[in-house]
Image (cartoon, rainbow, N blue to C red):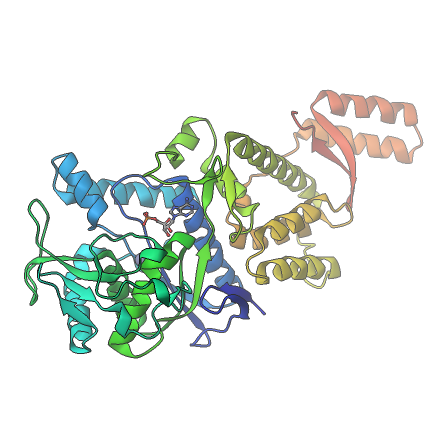
Length: 459
Ligand code: AMP
Ligand code: ZN
């Protein structure tokens, strides 16, 4: 049974979707005013593992990931560069999708853009106004009155004593101990894009964007809402307030949050200037999948301190794994069709992998199981390969694409001759043949299929 940590209840819970076969997930997507940094990408990798896990468990998945293409940060950047916001958001949206592909992050079913859903946001604000939990300020903006929503703070466990009744905040981001009435619609300001609305010209606040897009594509209630821990307050708390006031239904049953990626012990953030992008990683000669491997070595609810040394270790780990798989592939030459699902070792490994995964996506344990499989001397190579390919559907490390390090014909013949010499008890000839195999860059290892030539690792 899949168990996931739910921020809302503060505990690990059995996961059962509302609809038996289909899981509906909403994922807060990127704000496209710059390249995503690798902290953001850590969160998207976790969300991808979650998605793949659900599919591995037999569910269909409908995942919505928005593209925030209008907000304070975008406007600021556009004004700075004297550009139209689309000239900023279009290339960074393309760059983000390229990052996803490079990291083997599966494409969500829907990737709606905020600017294409202004009407939906306006209708939602109208519904909230009708419920009397929103009001228009003298500045023309529309605000949500948090003191009238009794559940306010249920996600972030806010202390209600800190609520500043009547005080307002226009900024999209602020701290938990500064909770105030937040903005749903920001009235038009000079040098800002605006849309017409019944409450006057202006633009949506960031929080209403996600409420409108999630409910449009997933309905008033869905199974899982994800993000990183910084999204809990105020973003997700405000999404809950707005949506639940409008519909009277719980927005999402599970709220799942990834911990941050840190640099030198501090949260990686654009504003702190301590960030790297996937391009920086590639420039240093690392494949993006090395970063994915690094992310999987840490549980998603633990902080991950990024350093180039840790990336280098991840590279060594992944290179070794790929090397082992190449060697397994080359020794699987004579075992075609021997794959057997009833093999108890296979079942044992698959169960072990599943146990790690179902315990709140324990990817470090999953990697350990993968290594156990690779190192198992008893398990036939063909079985190993099938199993690795199956498990990699969840891990997404591209292990299925590894091509066999085919043994050269010459080595194959030497190996056969050596086996014959051994059977004939001509040990001197057998030794000479072994040396010739080693000179060709291969060594003989015992496998479940008998002696096999394995490529010598370049250390
Ligand atoms: P943004 O583009 O700023 O809206 O952020 C995109 C996603 O990345 C959000 O889910 C954030 O919570 C998440 N995020 C931001 N900083 C970090 C970080 N240092 N580590 C992990 N996730 C982060
Ligand atoms: Zn969001």
